[in-house]
Length: 165
Image (cartoon, rainbow, N blue to C red; front, side, top):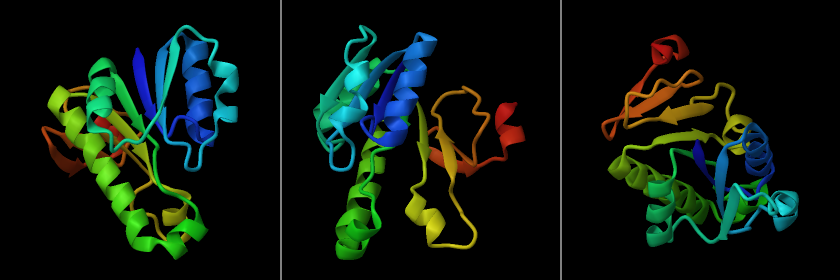
């Protein structure tokens, strides 16, 4: 499988990339290093099955090319951190919402599977989380660990059991 991981130089993205590479998958990382670090992926750079791009998900041309080449997109890129969110709440929301929209639009055009997870800020700010993990799919590919599924460019809620069917 070929994976595109946005936010790939972050803590979770880099560990996911490492696991996928060990499994034998091909991985492309996209990260602007706003909170990620090249140090997180330095040990992965020697792999022939790993490529990385230091750029923003707002780069539509690059994003379209990377999504087109991927079988699965794992969207972890986000403006995060309590300090950033408190100091620039509107910019943070715009970055996260617009970035996710760009990912979903590119994936929808090419009918690619997209996995995404919420930030810790969402879970810390509420007593009951509304969105922990989601699988967005424009194909009939089943998603087993999901709270929502994106099909045919529209969203519908599913339980993990229903998604596995």
